[in-house]
Length: 562
Image (cartoon, rainbow, N blue to C red; front, side, top):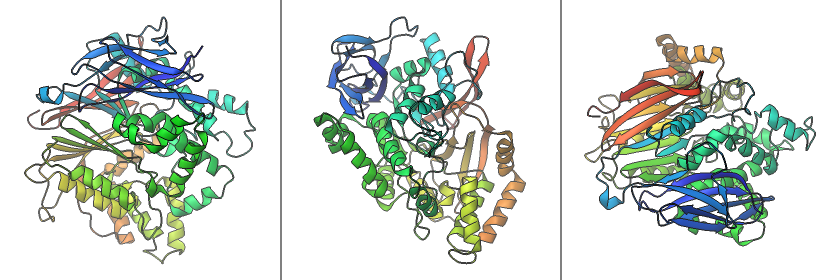
């Protein structure tokens, strides 16, 4: 008798028809997974096997547009979801209006954040404070009338392969010697499944992900801290005995647990790897081969993707695996990836009111941090003393020790993204807003750029914002809090310009200022978009006598007519 090991996760809800969705599940043995909805919609799929685990991504068809319907999950005809006596409301699928009936007046709510350690088991102290996803689940479960996100964007570090909990450490110690590399870190696919099990089996998060659609993209801790920082870093890590298995297992597990659910049913049907693993009794070898090739030749695999929510366009951009690390050609995105992002951002001008670019790493950092990263990149490529010289060695050491590997550390990519954003936000068909949604830096802030009056192409007409929100459930040392505050200060800005002069980085294309934050804590941001109007809310998880609750820290309009 098959049982439900993990899930269900509601992933893709089709905004082009309002009648299709996908639901991801993991079972404990081979089975047929079925989703049945109260409105008569349904779907089923046979599980596929990876490394002794059994998964299905069920395509649900026949949903009623502009409706909310409860659903249940069956394995071989036996109902396994909802769980008995769960205490949570029924899991539901909410669909948008059919395009012909969409007046544009229905608000679209997009919540986002990054960096989530799994919450500890019930009864154990939570050393980093209440989990924002747990608090969101509690709010939605307690108040059926509460505003519910139409989609949850998880912008990286969904799991921490290199910073495991005490419970996971005990599980790993039971199967191998932790004194051998990689020590108390995830080593293989089976251990990755422990991370997802720990993270997604949390009762509140499990229910939340079953009823709010989600889009995901990885960041470094999904594999290892500062993944793909530089060519020298990559050469060093590839020389270790544990790295090959880590990267293959990390990419393979990401494909199963996160990437597949990002895809539309049409994209799934056209995916040759998905077809291959479903056509064989065990898809482990084809998936491992794919993951190894994706690491060896990153340009051959695209993890980035596009989603559309009515007149809102979202581009989720891979800023980890698609990097070019050669110091002479250093780029956040390889040429094909950069071309794809550009084409998707500029296609069909006038067809969207808001452009959202989801990138785990912020485009606009505190000015001192930005200048320090650009200065360091100049040192590493030999701007002072030549390639391989003393300054270059100092720069590489500093880059690794200080996590200097954001967009600013790839100066040519920063300039290209800046110009793309200006271009996308300009012209008679410009959207109302262009928002870059990011996480990674364990605090939240709003930054707004400005272009010089004589800038080539002129200043954009859209309102352009960097919206950064993290962590969902993690922490930041007090010294880093002080450091980030200083990095936004006038003194910090002057220090940054001194570094830029030393590195001969040249004048910046734009200036930017902080218009909100910094905020520290476990938190989520939500964009509420209606027509050409936009508003932003920031909530933080706080402990109370009733448990974790969300406290509103910011609620403001982003457009003048919102």
